[in-house]
Length: 345
Ligand code: SP5
Ligand code: ZN
Image (cartoon, protein in one colour):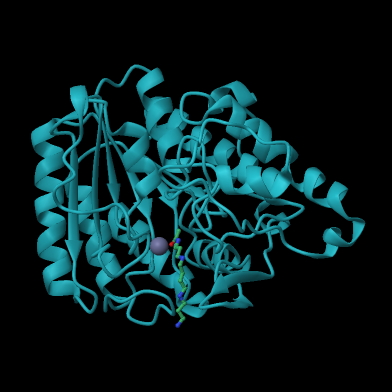
């Protein structure tokens, strides 16, 4: 499996996230990607390359200019408030909900953090921009490799991406790597691109980015948002809008669901991708469906991920894999590489 590895991922290392009124240690840690890289090398599963560099303009097909401007400068703005902030993660504390305007752009830093975010669980740090930016390069590199004829490529990066929208971060995500890959495949001339999101959490950012488009079909299997993050999106009645009506399909499953039901649902999601007649596939590869995951609620076993990879291969499409969630650090490497090996066999 041709792998583009984000060598700057560990520059993004949050200390704490807000949970039930307390600041708790981050679940989304550098060791996650280290484990996947180590397992890839151990199994000798193909080449590991640094990403090719892309201009920031390559991000504008997915993200807004003002969000990118904010994100690029956010850490310096945070430290400018108080030099002591250099030792503290930046977290938002105020948000423009519903009746408040979301189109204004306040000078106040906290106000801008809230305008461009969806939760207080995603610390922004000194290295966040550089890490996320190199991750975007990995996703774009993988997409170009696949557009150029490779059967598959893997963007091995963190922070993850699928909760990030056109103009907001959240859910540990800052730039939407899967959306960038899908958009790049479109720009390379593939007319219909499917995104299959198998992270435990619904990819609200990815869904929103493509919700009114007929050229990118988004389908996701995830914990029922009625009880699971991101809560406000990911329900079965979200089918797309405008030109995109019919090109979004969600498969929420109750917390506690196991591989039998998950696997049957995967066949339905793949059927939708076949009916869409996709020319390429982007997989948002979250491993937080694993039974041992500390923040999720499905019960997939390590061996099941081999089967998942084999099922994805049967779709028969050029495929970009993008690393997303998965927080059982000791197992995430084996689980991720099981999917890739199952696909390659
Ligand atoms: C990419 C991705 O998987 N993002 C997930 C973001 C989830 N954020 C909410 C986490 C809530 C933490 N719950 C802690 C439970 C401890 N028992
Ligand atoms: Zn997740």
